[in-house]
Amino acid sequence: MSEATEKKMVDVFSDIDRDTALKANPSGYAVTEIAAADDRVLTMTADLSNTLAEFREAFPDRYIELGIAETNSVSVAAGLAACGYVPYIFSMSPFGMLKTAEQWRTDADYNHLPVRLVGRLSGLAMGYFGTSHYAVEDIAIARTFANTTVVSPADQHAVLALMRGTADCEGPVYIRIAEAVDPVYDTVPDIPRGTWPRLREGSDLTLAAHGMGVGLAVQAADVLKAEHGISADVYDGGYLKPFDEAAIADTAARTGKVLTIEDHTVNGGIGAIIAETVARHKIAADLAQCALPDVDLEVGVPAELYEYYGLTVAGVVARALELTKG
Amino acid sequence: MPADITLERGRPASDTELARRADWIRLQTIDLIAQAGLGHYSSTFSCAEITATLYYHVLRLRPGEPRWADRDRFLLGKGHVATGLWPVLADLGFYDKTLLKQFGKVGSPLNDHPNMKLAPGIDFSSGSLGHNLSVGTGMALAGRLSGRDYRTFVLTGDGELQEGQVWEAAMAASHYKLGNLVAIVDANGFSGSGPTSLAMNIEPLGKRFEAFGWRVQEIDGHDIATLKETFDDLPDAATSEQPTAVIARTRKGQGVEFMEKQPQAWHLGLLNPEQYADVVAEITARMELAGAGAGTDGGSAQ
Image (tube, rainbow over all chains, first blue to last red; front, side, top):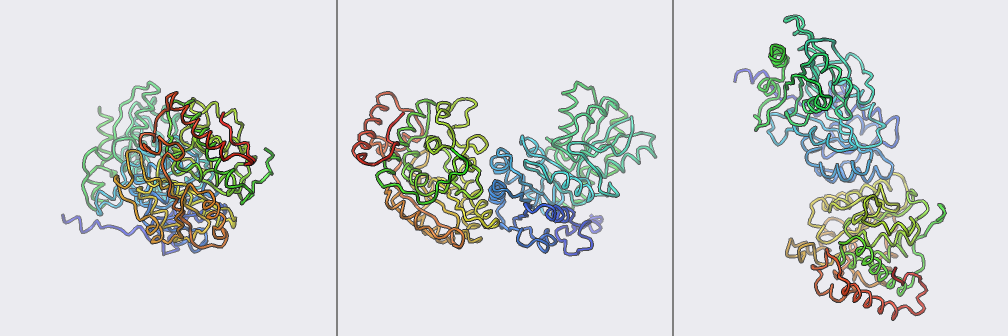
């Protein structure tokens, strides 16, 4: 375990250092910007106020703390939304969509209300804290709700793009924040609603990912090209609902091989979106997933866990090579 | 109804009128349930006086403009008694009475539980117990944020108070000093499968709400004069800093003798033709007895 001393837990909660707010806490930065342009916007947290230092300073009267009571928070937000407000609830992912799924469905989704849930610390981001703190099933749940928009930004610039892009959604939005991401975009990208930016053009296989998986996909594509002469078509699937049906059908038909990468279980995430879509379009394509297995998960520092489960550049390259050989 | 006609708070309604209105709700309810084939009788009957008093005396409403920003909000936490609300909303002009004929049919906006997306006059959907006091807390917070003086009323069942989320909301409402929020507990002592106290004791209710920082009024939920007085004396919505819990002690199945004796059996069911006739006869006789000079057109069944 000598490596464990190198890979330690990182404090991802604080945005006290204002100069680095965008880098360290892009969702807190983005909601402050959105609120400046729209006085209907409120923020709420279930004891996660330290992620909103900037917002609270700018708009102290538009921040509502509801304590460690996530289910109540979602229903209170629905009541506020029914009276014309646009509340953004900041929560830890495992206690957001997972704990409040029924309140979300019945109060926010069924009633088409503009409630936003920003899930910090998604996937295995809280690895060392234990499996109670994992949010690895949340996308599978969120995307079954008919009126809910689901986004999973690739990096801090994508957080701004997708939070700006969903700010005027009439229905509810789930924004899943990945904490440990490799930068993908140099500036804030323009991502029309429901579209998947094509980050690399290739013909041998497709890499489709969301959240932290996108950075891995881009880097893996570069390794595949430089070291193996394999060209990958790479997509940022940050819009998980609505998703880019046309792009999936197009790339799957061209490459015939799709590898998905996500910090989520193999059930119901982007891997399932691809499988369902190619089946619906009757496209013959080989599919593979870099994702978390459908078993009890291990506990540890995130960086080590990602290595263990192959959610690394090397892991993606290895799966891509298997897929292209097959 | 024209959009700008406001039904003001405290509009005149005699105790007799409101008592007859409650019985009218009962008669309308049995007709709607007969139409649908199954329904919640005894829990609708336990809150009939509360519903009548709120809609014909207490709430500030604009039936022609159901989403009017300054209306008082009414949330039916115990959504399974919406059957008793549909005829009231039709009578007040939120929608045409002919809509009642579609009750329970595919495509109808009126169902066993209320849906805000479908039915005018429904301030929030319900059906999943325990949610609406939280939603009402959000609406009351919105009233404070927007500087409007509307009140938000949430009618809950007593069994519903077993849901933990209710107490999360109770905590938040007093924390935020929401004097514009009123919880009314239809404490009829029964939930779906039997006495509430046997399923999970929730008493002492008054002390529990007090401990959560609420102003508590414990009353007879069938006594019209007391209901009127309780609601007339609510603290000022704009300035009061304490939410109010009205613990309305009621009888499940109130107003129909055989249902009062077997409230649990009539939580969900369907009257046979003989029982239907007995219920109509019992209620109609009472209304006629009370009706002389009551001055309401609400006394006749369909």
